[in-house]
Length: 416
Image (cartoon, rainbow, N blue to C red; front, side, top):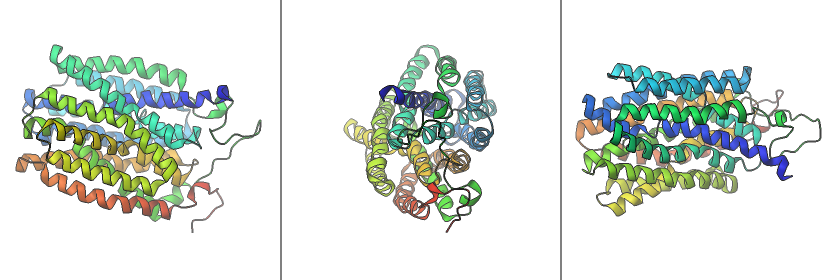
């Protein structure tokens, strides 16, 4: 039995590596680059976040496209082409000299990352796992955190020794080594390609599992879809709104040096490793509603801590609690979507929901940055984020309640 189940966890490894590059490199490392670009090109805190906004918005469009491509074409070619585009985007960053050229490089990176990021990884884990789906999601998606933790330190060291341009070239090389073997040799779209069935849904020999779940055409007409869309936006808006401004907050507001900011951010990444696995396990054992309450409590503690983080101890408290809750940015949307909609149209549905995730990721950091530019403080944005965190629990719970029974629908089922 152990041999039979082995390849399920190879898929988790593949997702881990793809998330390490798509988010660990593409999103989490931008904190350090942002400070360097502000110094060299005199970008403001708000304008420098436009670079990441472009990458996120393009990845939103890409996520919808990827969802449709995965429904029509073999998965490995789609992922491999996306990997090559992502690598090219990092190389282009190293050649940029203006805000416009940075935005163009971001567009390339964004479209590539969409094809190796949350949508294909969520689809793979949803197809390969019935039991332990939360645990598998937590481990696979923790790649974004481990990648951030490792690559932030690499970027910090390379910037210090050779500059930010060389750091981007180094990231491109690492991405090539990690992505191409993964997409070409590890990824398999379905368990039956390895003579297996989804973990927890073993079938008789030769039997095919009929994919169940609500169709995209039916789901987008339900209240559950729109509540889930609002929750996807809110999760990324409040989490990335803080995350992408951590280095700016500690250096520009609190007057700490870049090494201090990098270490706090690295601690956030370290805690996120455990946070993602813990949140996945909480969803498996306690359910979606309990998980939503847990996330809200952790978020409120984290925001209060950063507002008082004038010394190392409070800064560490912030890093720990924010690391725990920011796990929800990549764990909650794919897990909750999978539990509600089932397998049949998951890639397309989650691709659509990723539009709202992407908009939140793009807008959150800019809103926080603009508040800082206007007032010299992030506090106004932080108060808004806390209010939204309280509302988020209700939204997720209602989306789940209104979607009960959707995951086991067949093509003849009607929405009631």
